[in-house]
Structure formats: structure tokens, C-alpha cells
Amino acid sequence: VPCQGGDWPQIMGPYRNGHAAASESLAAEWPAGGPNLKWQRPAGSGFAGVAVFQNVAILFHRIEDEEIVEALKADTGEVLWKHQSPVSYKGTFNPNDGPIAVPLIYKNRVYVFGIAGHLQCLDFKTGKQIWSRQTHKDFQVGEGYFGVGSTPLVIKDKLLVNVGGKRQNAGIVAFSLDQGRTLWQTMPDDASYSSPISAYLNGSFVALFITRLHLAGIDPENGNILFQFPFGKRGPTVNGANPVQVGRHIFATASYGVGGFWGEVKVNSTSEIWRNEQPMSSQYTTPIEYDGALIGIDGRQDVGPARLVCFDPVTRKVLWAEENYGYATLIEADNKLLIMKTDGTLVMATASKEEYKELGRAQVLNSTTRALPALSNGLLFVRDTKSLKCLTLNNSGQSPVTPDKSSSN
Image (tube, rainbow, N blue to C red; front, side, top):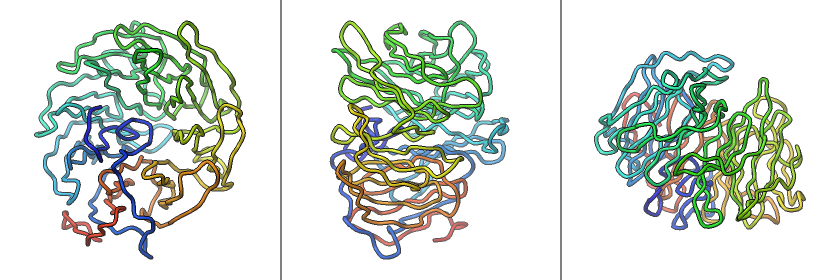
């Protein structure tokens, strides 16, 4: 996704891998009470983190029977526009009824994928709807355990979506960016909660998808399956973490007894190197590659204490681990890790494969959060199902403003 330094236009940041832009500069330490609150405002249900582009933050949430996309001025929280569409989804295994997929900003368009499969393209400047598709209806999609939770991917002139449809191999569908026309569909798989990535392998771009039961490499031009491996388990399980590219290797991880997968993509063949529950079985946190090592969560949010672990995927050797850490999601910026724990604690640590060194810790949200944080120009956006907060993490530290009179600092 073309972006300026400091933008966070899609899930997992400018490169879709958890690394912030090289221009991001973080303060080495926080004030005694934690990072300064720049602004906050109420938020509805859902776990979708925000996307940020050119000082505009896109919030996707649900209030009552409406899924709402709001454009906010990133540095003040002022509402620029709002787009609402009706939704009737009710939580099944989990009471959450709001959107999970992070908005995607690309070339003056915003793409959102609602909890019940409503795929929309909006004008980034005005919020006007350009096109929409009801994917559940169009492709015969089941409701899934937690609704829709995979963020779409743009490659060249196509929007690739983990749809999970039963109608004519609609597991993965490509839509035209301009009109939302179906361009191709491939694989009979149900959808997962993992978001696809674009990987440059052997001289061309490949879309890497984790579906309900496979890790697959797809040719974005025509939907041809270039390679696939079994990944995932039937029954009450989910694949929630995104695939990670490390050179010509691919790492995938899941909980529920699935564990980690490490494979290699060569010009004429793709091979599985290892799969094992150790050292990383992550429920939905995508690990971050740092200096050849992988740093992430081993464990589940809902069962037992998870650990934070750094390991070498080539040897499977654990380089360091913080036991009983608790569940969290991660960002790397300025050679630091920003770790958003699901209990509302934000941690800053040194990004290193040598050791875990904590630099700061603060309670920034007061209820469980599963939304991915977003970092843009020194501002960190975090949310739960009550509020969206903007925190100052660079060295400027201005006083907070509250754009919405009903919220308080």
C-alpha cells in the first residue's frame, strides 16, 4: 500500500508485518503516569483497530444496529465524516457483535469488511459509498464462530478477500477495486480470522492466505493455487494470526493443538520444513520478525497464562521467553516493541533477540481489548468497546484535548 512515512493504512501497519515506518521516533521513557493522552472519544462494539493515512484515522465500530465507519482527524479526534449501514448479526460463541476486520485505505478509497460479510468501498475524503457487496448472500457463506474477521488485501488492481463461500470455490475471491466486480474465485475452504499478506517470492508477488484448513500461495492475477499445505483443525478452532514472510520462508501459527509451521518457497518447489506446537502456538497474535528471529505470543487469551517468546525459526531454539506474560498484540517501531496486553496494559520493551528489557508499562484501557493498536507519527491509537484513545509516544507530549463533550479525560 503506497503511503507516506508515519502512515498506518492497513492491518499490521504500512508493510502489513507489524513494523512501523522507519521515520517513527519514540520517546525512550514515559512520564510517571504513562504516555500522555492526546484525546479520547466513545467507541462502540467490535475489535477492529484503526487505520491511519495523512492525519485521518478510520474507526470501524458498531452502535446498536448500525456498522459505522468514521473518519477522524488523527491529531484531534474531530469527526470529518461518518458512514452508517444496517447490520443484524448477533454474537454466537462470543458476545461480540461488532466488526473485527481492520479498515484498509488505498488510493483515496477506504475498504471495510463487516462482521456479517458486508464488503464496502467508500471515498476516503467524503465517506460516500462507491460500491458494496453482500458476500454472505453472493457466495453462500456460513456465519462462522465469530462472524467475519479477515482484513482484505490489495495487490495491484484487485481486492483479495478471505470470503469462505460455498458457491463455486469462493473460499478466496478477487474483486475489482473500481466497481467491486468478481474477477476470480478459488479454493473451497471456509474463511479464517487470519488476514492475507502479499509476499515477493522468486520474482513475483504471491498472495499468502491462511484459510480455515490451509496455508496457500495464490497467484493474484488469476487465482491459481501455486502451493498449499494443510494448516488448522476441524472442530471448535480458529486460525487467527497472519502468515509471516521471512525471506523465502513462511511462518504460520495457531493454537488449539495446531502450533507453528515453517516452510520454504523455491522456484520449482515449496516444502514444509517443520511443524510443531513448540515454541509458538498463537491464538490470533501475528508474530514480528526481528533480525531473523520471531517475537510473539505463545498461548491463548481464553485458556491459561500465555507467554511472550522470541525464537529462531530455523533451529526452533527459544532465545528468550517471559512466562505468565498474558495475552497481547505487538508493534515494532524505532527498535522498540509496543505490546498491547488484552487486560488494557501497554508495555514498551527493547526490540532484541538477545533479551527482554522492559522500558515502560502503563494501564491505558480499563476493559478487555482485542483490537490491534495503530501507530502514526508518534501517536498510538488503542481501543476497547467503550473508547478510542490517542496517546502521545514521541517526544512532543502536548496536553490532551477532548473532541467529544460526552467523554472525559
